[in-house]
Image (tube, rainbow, N blue to C red; front, side):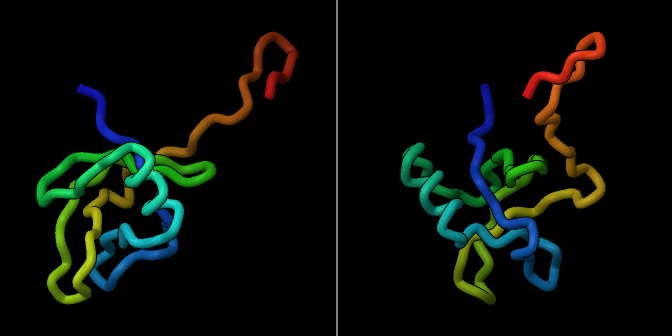
Length: 89
């Protein structure tokens, strides 16, 4: 089963390093894909050039959904494919 893929702002983390799932791009992705967040749910989080898997949690301190991620496991998305001296964008 493929994980849902949701936009996130990697600069919007709480003091525990969890990504807050409250920016407009996140809310739009959740609504468009009809995703209802639940504790323990696995999702893929992305921005323009980064991607990471995370686990959803509800932050009772901030009263909002967050995602626990491994900051050392963030991948850079490859936007440019190089093939035999040819650049395809």
